[in-house]
Amino acid sequence: MSFLFMDGISHKILDIVENRKLPALEDYFSRFSYQARSQVKYIVMDMYSPYIQLAKRCFPKANIVLDTFHIVQLVNRAFNQTRIREMNQEKTKNPKLYRMLKRDWKLYLQDFLTLSESRKYCHSLKQLISPSEKVDYVMSKKENLRQDYYFYQDILYAVKRKDFRLFESYLERWKKKLSSKMQT
Image (cartoon, rainbow, N blue to C red; front, side, top):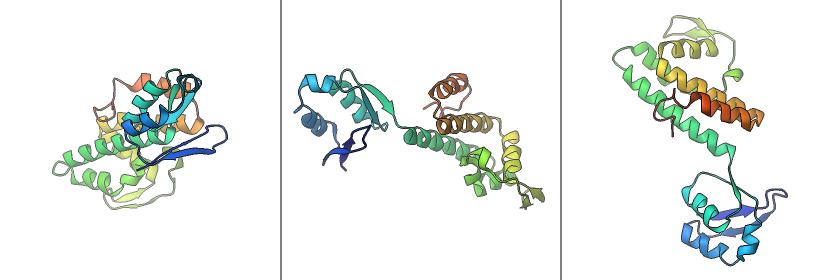
């Protein structure tokens, strides 16, 4: 796999390094003077730990910024793992809830504000119900999942608004209320 880096303002690709492993990247960036590397102010990256180590070692004055796509992806995966764990607990206890958690998995990963209000027949509940009502119903039955779901929705909202202070406040507010998977 390769390592691509670009100018954050112009979005111009500066170079592609064929190897993304830490020793190869350290060799590559050590070709630049310490003075030049010290002038780098920001590095935007995903959460691949060698990149974080590289940034700290090679760019001592740079602020590390994690890109929002990977933050949302991390929270999405953690929430989905919690959903699966909670779903499996219901397999014999409550097959109806199990089916709803399994069959409608995409609903729980969607932004709640985009869920349709149009009602369709739900065989599990034997009634007409909208996707948002279905999510509300399931969350009312699963306390642990509900906490993680609201956190996930808050993160989606803060990222969509590009509001870092709001994002930070959600992290602070929710950090002690979340499942172990979500505290990643």
